[in-house]
Amino acid sequence: MENLTAGWARAGAALVLALAIGSAVPAQERVASEEAAVAVFKERLEFMESLGAAYRMIRQFAAGRVSAEDAAAAAERIAAAPDRIPLLFPDGSGMEANPKSEASPAIWERWDEFEAASAFLRERAEEFASAIESDDAGLISAAAMALGREGCGGCHGLFRADNR
Image (cartoon, rainbow, N blue to C red):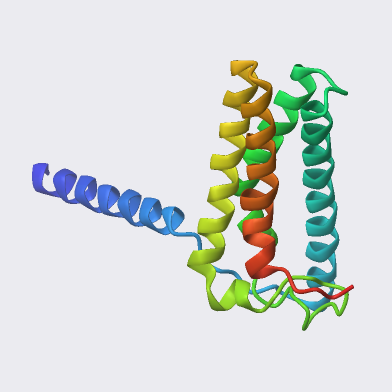
């Protein structure tokens, strides 16, 4: 009986480990249908527009037009984005599925770089949040510019097709 119990415990531990490994390495899912591609495109567009609005709030703070609290909330929203961004780019949801998409095929060709660029966005947003706490106008301005140029622009420069 002890061997049977130990065997089940090992099997359970192996299953837990397999599930943990599987969830730690996100599978690059393929969009299931044309309807799903349209839905994810709309969701992605709305999400990216919300990030653009958050960045505009940050720029307004750097110009002295909104509160530090509003800017900190915007930075927090941007810093959380890398958790969601890769999920909004399933394979098959780019320009081949929607001609209005600005998602370059390079996203799926260089997926690891895409995820790294997304994670870099978090770093720049966190640096901006730290700059707010410093109350140093020069540091705030530089961090806001770096967030736009290197955080948002770092990904857009490599993975956004000019399809407008």
